[in-house]
Image (cartoon, rainbow, N blue to C red; front, side):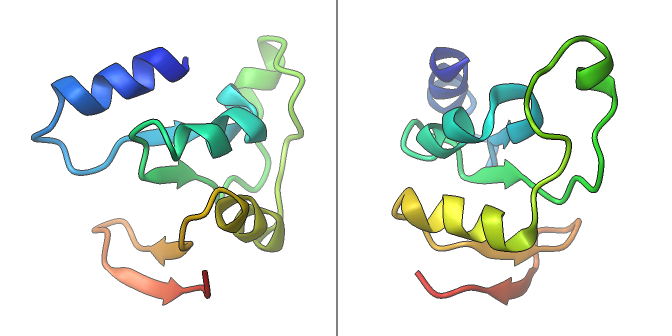
Length: 93
């Protein structure tokens, strides 16, 4: 997964945002992916069902505080954005 995300960043340089979906990749891999070219962690999942019905063992939800902490621990600044990628809220680094 990390290799695909990193290669995606290199080959898709005309696409501004590469997303890591933490319920699929696990929170730890989503965090590591922030140093592999990913600049968007899909986080506002209230309760994920599809991957879990297929056997995913990650948690089904993550609080905003947990998500912000995960991004900050990766050395990044968490920024909440709307569907058009306009900044809604910027959290301290």
